[in-house]
Length: 330
Image (cartoon, rainbow, N blue to C red; front, side, top):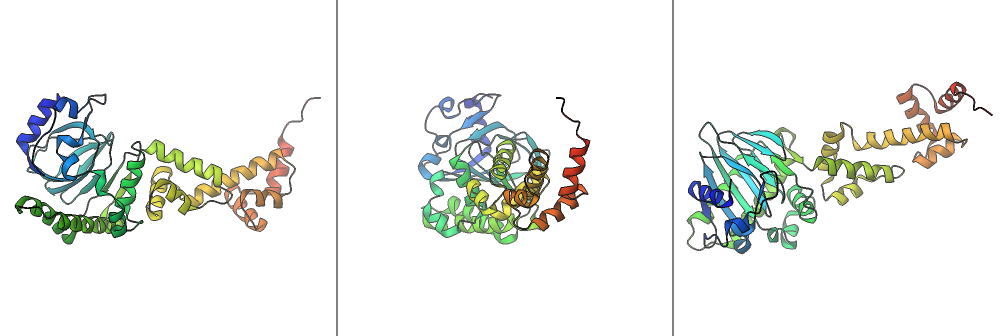
């Protein structure tokens, strides 16, 4: 779809609430093509470069082509069921679902077969400043996710919860109504409501029954995790890795499990034990020294975990394997 046709469709089907309600610039300049029929929505397309916060409501005629954007987007399914493709992954979103997209996330919304309604909050990155950090706290999942995305757009994942409680839904509705009904927008009230929404969303994301999760660029995230463990398996720190990824530690644990099928502790233990096997075969170091080198301060514990995984003790493994190895020709 050409940029000017896209904009014409959006204007016909959406209700805009922002300062000025004006589109500044040529749609072709504001939606450059990013390849593979994916266009990039820029802030000026919706006036986000001026107002920082823009609200939209899109009902019934949901059929939005593949795109990404250079701003943060929050979606709330306030009615019906919507099918959406995000970074190539197909999701079915039921009423009450909330998503937060980072910059660079590719997504599209497919035409719905039933009555649907989606509310949007479009945010300039300036919203996520030091003042908001003080309000939310460093461990807030939304703030951590957005700050990580702003630091590196390749970390272009999303947050999702498929359950919203009544109080969180009311905050969203109050945000929308404040922008729509006020003759003069009260920016301070908007920011207070936005902060409350992010605090409540953080709570939902950390509630197991909310069916929440955080999606990242899987390849980048897996590489970062495995590289960190490979470089730090002797003395690893989950907090250090979480800080590197700008994530809450509890979230990181869930992400690691989702990506690898194992916990952080299991990944570290696997690498330690594989390293032990290599050193047993290719060195004559005492087992106590090997244990210390890979991070086991108590050699007895190495014997226990090694036997639990491989069925033999380290000394038995070394002797039996060396016996089976063919002698080198002179």
